[in-house]
Figure 1 (spheres, one colour):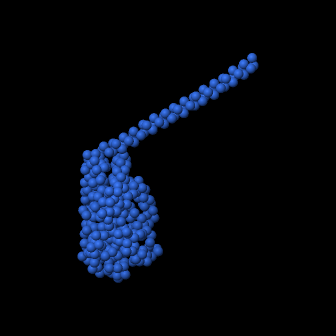
Figure 2 (cartoon, one colour):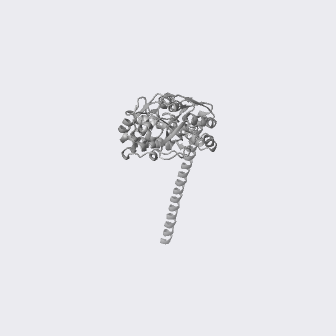
Figure 3 (cartoon, one colour):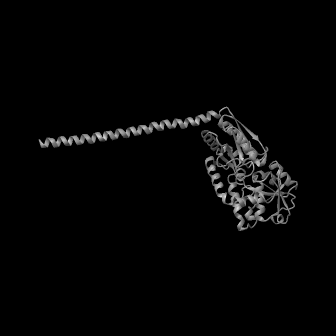
Length: 365
């Protein structure tokens, strides 16, 4: 009898273990099913968001604002990108030039347009960042809240003079009183570099503002209405090739492939150690340079869709080749990476903003 009880007890323990294992297996199976169901539900939602964004743009008109007249660097890049953008979106893409205030009038326009993703801008990220750092009147934006879509390019700044310039070199420029420069306005992505060069080299400079864009600024230098100017090197290159202007130095940490014999500022002159901080800061801001941006408030799925579209366009060998034909090199950076860069720049500059303000806004106008 005792043996029968023991056997019965053993079988019961075995049955309990089997039941427990069966229950555990059912729970695991149910959990797996739940995960699979959730994944299957989430995937269509992600796809649906993408399809909704694509459907939204199809057949619409998209405007790309440019803050300078036709023919400048920002305009030419926007027109390079417009045809493949239209093809990708299945939309009509128009480039809309709105010059004024060093390109910032167009950024202000972007902010008052409906935040529906149908107006974007090929902007000077530099000018937007600097204007906010300096709390310039009219700079109502927060660059960290703008929706950065992609960086398109970056070219160094070139200090140049006319073919018959009065002060064709740095030693000669040091003798001028004053050395005059052309610009569209204060902190316009041009005059701030002119002010920084003047500060670090101890030049007695006067920055003349009011020019409409790169064409007017360069013409003033060529005609010797002013002594010197600053342009993006790719915008200045045709004038260098035709010998109507002469390069002096690049405002850049490195030389530029299309002007390999032109030295950087630090190569061309000894920079005082206590002043190099502002050169370093401004050159870091220059890394953001030309960029595509949408207003705050554009739906997140539209922002991500546009970022994906620009990633395809700006890494497309055919688009890159088209740009290279006119020395318009594409230096793509993703929108999310650019968003982080802008945030880091704003944080890094904060301790030196009073000095920065005095040098680039209060000294040479």
